Image 1 (cartoon, rainbow, N blue to C red):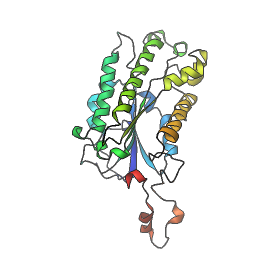
Image 2 (cartoon, rainbow, N blue to C red):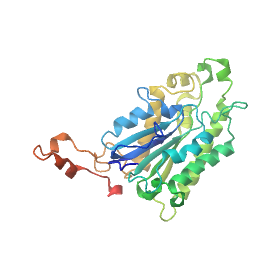
Image 3 (cartoon, rainbow, N blue to C red):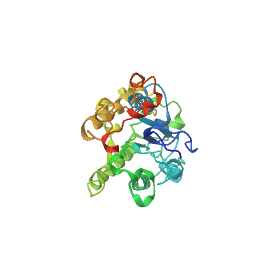
Image 4 (cartoon, rainbow, N blue to C red):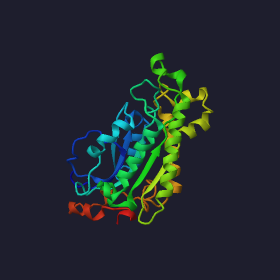
Length: 290
């Protein structure tokens, strides 16, 4: 993998598994998950992050519709660079599974809570442990990992009886609780010496339950009872904004604060017109990357 110019935010899944052949000006943001991550409708998680981090972080969307953690785990090595393969720095990784994992038996996607817990733990250990060999662990002070709970499902909005029969509100809640449990364990774990990375949870299930009491108002946040619409993603964005502005203040992820996360690539007006290469003099990095 070539050296990226910008750090990255990763939704734990690249849009393809091909080697990244271009240099990126920005560090990376990776997004890993299922269709809730993969979807790029107006107002989606992907679009909101892309707009916020323009010129600041490269966004790599690795959402795979229909996937469960058991299927994402084997391809992790095809998504994340190993130490020495890339000089890029992963700044933000979001991991968002659970809706499919919570499918009822006999669905082929049926997953036990214990297996789901083990897979999430595996992802975190691989991303943070130097012994795992992934490049994400090379700069722990710059690494931030978000676990997102699956949102509630709204069964009356699911059109087909066959599809509706695959889900239950109670079981989805069990998987949301697993995410919170893993996040709590790792929030304590990160206090150890030399572990400057951060792990936190965005409890989307809990926030939507608070706003709707899990009643008919849930329909306002979904396109089909499973997938969020722009209003649903806006709830997630509210949670993310609160995280960045408060618990993760000063972590170099505040897109509205140039002192915390400066634009990596400068505005054209500061470039010396007689010396185009002067653009290199204005490339900026947050404190955690200096």
